[in-house]
Amino acid sequence: MYRLLHAAGLWALLIAGGAQADEAIWRNHMATAAEAAKRSDHAAAVQLYEAALRQTGGFAPDDARVAATIFGLAQAQRAQYDYAAAEKNYLRALGLLETAASPSEARNTSLAGVLNALGDLFRVQGRHADAEMYYRRELTIIEQTQGSDSPAVAQALSNNFAALYRAQGRRSEAEAAYKRAFAILEKSAPADDPRLGFALIDLAEWYQGEQRPAEAEPYYRRGIPIVEKTLPPAHPRVLNLLQDWGVVTQLQGRYKEAEAVYRMLLSLIERTYGADHPNVAFALNNFVGLYEVQGRQSDANAVRKRMLALNNAPLRTQPYVPEQGVPRRR
Figure 1 (cartoon, rainbow, N blue to C red):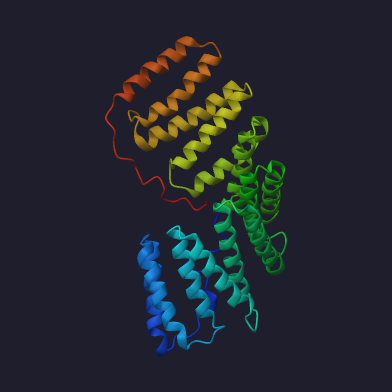
Figure 2: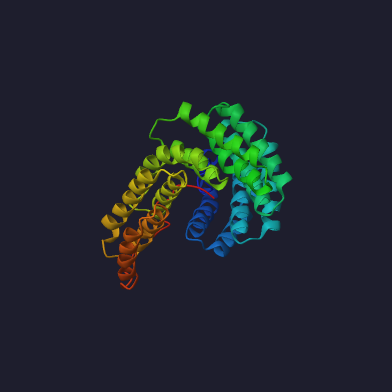
């Protein structure tokens, strides 16, 4: 799912007021730091945010620009795996926002973003109780400001709580989080909304991981066509989902349906990469297993022969960078 808040634009509402001449240096440092972070030059980003922070000495302590600068610094420090420094600065930004004299929609949005960042930080460190506390505070703000059935709530449930519960082995709670997120989006989002598509895939992958293929299959069936429209043609994410859909169908003994899905996958790869590309061999391997489980040994052997020829073919450039175009998740 799409992230609820993006670091680059998190503070836009708070600091979008008319620029003053005496803050030009601060704004320049902030913009340059954001560009450095975008190109993953995190060391430069840290230095630039620190420089920007030095320019906030003339601002009021509760000025939103101070919190924005400290938050940006924390984000850059986290990207460098300097978790202790990042935690310190996230908490500084949180404290400034919490004591703001006049809470506003923009302040609540930024406050939710800091709480989310703290939850993420603690989750990756295995500090699950701390992570859950901050995620719950964030969820409370979202529910109060956007409603308990908003898509933002669904996103928090799947991105934050389900992931946290899975890390802790709290399987029934993880499943409940995925199901509630899906129920919210099925009610509030259009039928072709990417958020709904990924909610369907979340449940499909969850049930597949739980060895419950019969429950996984209908979610793949509904979710894959939506996700496929969201990503570039033959994106690795789509190819993997088609593979999984075929597997869960095959595991239920529905061999004709599994073969149809595998043929969809093969056709997509051939159209994108070419019929003689080595990637085609990976799709053909599905048919070997499918035919063998049905006792169709001659068909399996024929596919193996084609696979062998493809495996000896020279590798060629991929049609695009695999990571390109993925609009979601951690």
